[in-house]
Each structure stands twice: as structure tokens, then as C-alpha cells.
Length: 92
Image (cartoon, rainbow, N blue to C red; front, top):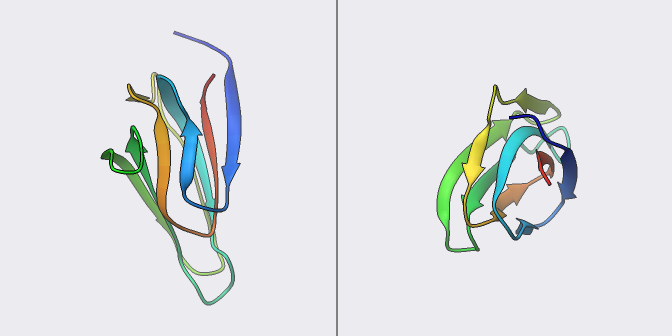
């Protein structure tokens, strides 16, 4: 099913989207040339279930588009363990 998407940028842990949504893509950037980037996306709030993790080497970027329907986050999406900057592409 095709639908509109939106991009949400985060530099700190916290909510990305409060309702049911699908992860369509992600861009994760390292904060500098000496520190690696990392992010965990949870289904639900700060104590939710880990649905997706990504890492990027120091000074680099990780970018990924998920195929077809992406990953369904039934109870909202939350970012945790973020080092760097993440842009999450999701259904709105």
C-alpha cells in the first residue's frame, strides 16, 4: 500500500511519532570523525520493544530504505541510545 511519508529529525532520545506508523527509511549520521553513530528505534515509549538498530562508523553516514511495507510500529515510535543525528522516514 502506498501512502504519504514524512521525515522526522532527532538529535536526542525521544518520541518520533505517537501513533501507529511504518518505518520506511532511515539516515544516521555520526557526530564527528572520532565517534561512531548509533540508534535504537522502539515500538511504543521509552521502555518499548526494540524493533530496529543501526550503527554508522565515525565520520560516516548510514542510509537505508526499507522494501515494500517497511517495519510496522503499532504503538508509536521512540528513539533511544542515540549518538549522532537521525532522520527517520515514516508513514504519516
